[in-house]
Image (cartoon, rainbow, N blue to C red; front, side):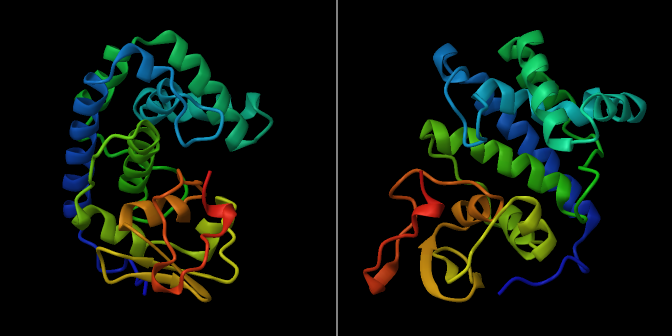
Length: 219
């Protein structure tokens, strides 16, 4: 079952976040032009909008962030969508990859969330890209573990996750979440589900039970 983040080492989290950003920059550098315009798992965003969003925290000062939020009527979702679309159009793919690499050690993390929020932001959005494109990138399990342990009811509500009657079970970690019909998948795929993503068919399975995966969890 999920634990807590009280005993997470902040230095280890910073090292993991920096490594994740550098590796994702390498992934972005290797994408073909048409892949940048392919849809990601973030609803309504292509790969380029998702990549642009990932560097927002490095590029926006606190006053600018507040001004953008005010322009969006106080809605964080509207603000992030508007800024991602604008910034995706303003930067080349090479620039978006470079922003991640050059700011790998930047201490930014989302304004909501616990100690692992910065790492979660990069891992989840990186998977939004690689899973949607069918790339076989496996995030190291020592980065996934603290993110699964940091899942809270508040976070599930924020992402609109409803797991009523479902127990998520990781195939590659000792982790489960929820109660009900077991649904199995890799730890990184379960992390996506817990952040409100619907996965491509075939990434989740019902194990020996032989039951179908709930349609709310897959595309």
